[in-house]
Length: 394
Image 1 (cartoon, rainbow, N blue to C red):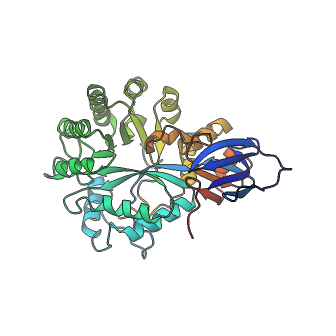
Image 2 (cartoon, helix red, strand yellow; image 1 turned 90 degrees about the vertical axis):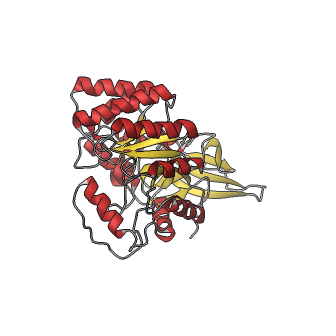
Image 3 (cartoon, rainbow, N blue to C red; image 1 turned 45 degrees about the vertical axis):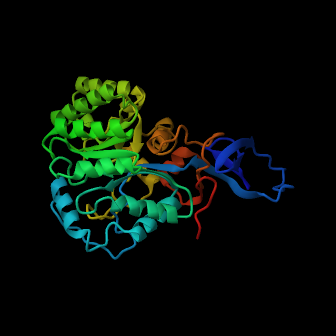
């Protein structure tokens, strides 16, 4: 079956027809308004794009798909407003809410895909209480979705690594059973042994051939020190291009020379960074990171979970917030913010390309907007979402 998506404007450019076969864009043809949507091949279907703006599918590079109570009755937030306080609150109440839940994860996924997100890197809790069940739940939900969204799993030790004996074994098992990455959490302030945690994580990643994705909330020089340890180990183990720092707030509050040295180290070793565009944290030096060639991904973090009640999952709205926090106003910068959430995030979901180009997976989002900057700031409803050329079943 071939699909022809007619009369769409990729990135706001000239009207084109996208020809899709086996889930991949096989041709981008200039649209001919006089040509009829007729084919002698009964295996070809036509979808009219009506001149709408086309973007690549949005890429959620930092999600927690297993944690949400999406679709359940409202859950009032409790717990202390610290990382440790939120961990304890979640551990105390997730069982009574049935978290992790295939049903809630599936409901959340459907909402995210309807808003144009077609690829995910999801941190899934792995700990002594839940074991590897969360990974199973997320995979089951993705399989039940009905469209082939891209998914990479980070086996995530939300409750700590070294301070919880047995967690390293779980991470090793998760990597052996197919998780694409293993995670870490504040090696200094949570485990209070940054060298020990990082050495253990890099050992597993090196042996199992997986990536590393570390939550790093620590700021200032404490955070900078852990960046240095991560960069050193990436260089020593040959894991270049397979290590990510999530949040990494310290990079936004260091003096210029110190920040530049860390960014240079990240560029040299291929260490990437993901942000959730938080409004109450040091601002990410987005333009500086991109100019240096450091990959930057954008994600929703948790959505309506036991860490907080916020989030609607609309990654395009989140990209607008990232642009605002970065002080972006010019059209080129606004387009860059959309690229962070789409085409430039290919590596975060294991793809060489993620765009509206020949050879790319046919993840396409149509919106009623004059151009990409307007799409960013207005976040209009998604008129059509294709995942590998398929629409989400009703």
